[in-house]
Amino acid sequence: MELEAKVIEIIMEQLDVDKEQCVPAASFINDLGADSLDLMELIMKMEEKFNVSVSDEELQNIRTIQNVIDFLRKNGVA
Amino acid sequence: MTSGYTTEGKVALITGSSRGIGRAMAVKLAGALCPFDVADRNAAKNAVEKILKDKGRLDILVNNAGIAASGLIMRMPEAEWTRMIDINLKGALNCCQAASRPMIRQRWGRIVNVTSVVAEAGNSGQAGYAAAKAGILGLTKSLARELGSRNICVNAVSPRLIETDMTSSLTHGEKEKLREQIPLRRAGRPEDVAGAELFLISPQADYITGQVIRINGGLYM
Image (cartoon, rainbow over all chains, first blue to last red; front, side, top):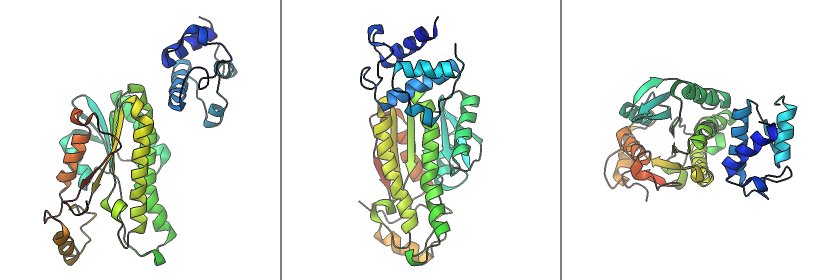
């Protein structure tokens, strides 16, 4: 499965949203109804699934689905 | 000194369990001792990781490790102030931070923080200790709000004059004076506090969060 598809699958499950809502520019908090704890839990799930580590600084930059995909690609996830 | 214990399938971490209130709580359960310095954030993180590696989960955290000291504000050394905050408040913060991760993942957790009656009533000569313990109240209520959606209950027990090594330095006269003010006319035992803690982590307390259970024989109401 492509990286985008994997990421969207996790987001759909974690935030209980539809695939149609998961466009790359979708903001977790503004568009997908996540609160700060939801977002934190989502990042935790991403860390575990893709074996990466998101620093506190990097966390500040993760606001949209595209941000997550960019981060994973930057950290060697195909 | 801290302990990781298992009870009925639940895994608990109790800090400061080698003596006093912590020990009374720990003897009700069964497990192994794994000492670490609560004021050290990485040590707390590593201790939780070790428990997760050994037991696969962490359900309960009891932040009991604490030290007391007496001294008037005019002469309080900065090092003592720092130590009070580090062990009594920062220690609890460190352990809550480390434990929150597995508890959020599990969608289940019980955190019990040990504060003190002096956090609400104050006590002359214990400004540092009382300030740190009052901090525990803010921590408890904030985390109750923050983590409640993940089925994590966070409460505090607030003891006063429990017969442990910590209070053994009080003179006989000081203890007598206190006892006269206590409606139940006796000092508390570590088991009195452990009983309340066990209640808070039990299914009977599933709808209780952000609360302070005062265990003081009626000394402060």
